[in-house]
Image (cartoon, rainbow, N blue to C red; front, side):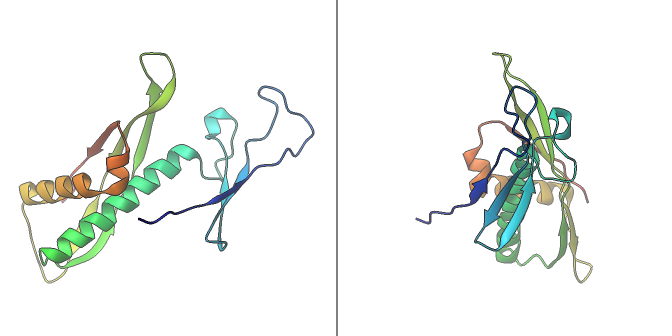
Length: 150
């Protein structure tokens, strides 16, 4: 099995390390080539110019779901031309009062070539299969909602 890694670096940048006073900005490097500027969510003092962990989780799920969908669609000979998604991570508190991602909502929109058409039921079944076979979805224990957009 593969082992995949990232490198994360955070440094104290203002000599203040006390509750609510330090920066959460950090860099995530992937394959020594891709540099992601990361931070906490803006509601927790981070910058909207940087990716936060909740967005990263939603992006990972959305990307994995799409790749699984494309693999299945190719197997079923569905002529996919375009795939778009707007993934939304919903935050809340669990029964212990701890913050967590309550639900991730995927909103895939698929465009087909050659006037190919499928029913909402067929799309729903394919999206459900995609969810069941997605590695990231199988790693999560919380709710994922897939909204069908035809």
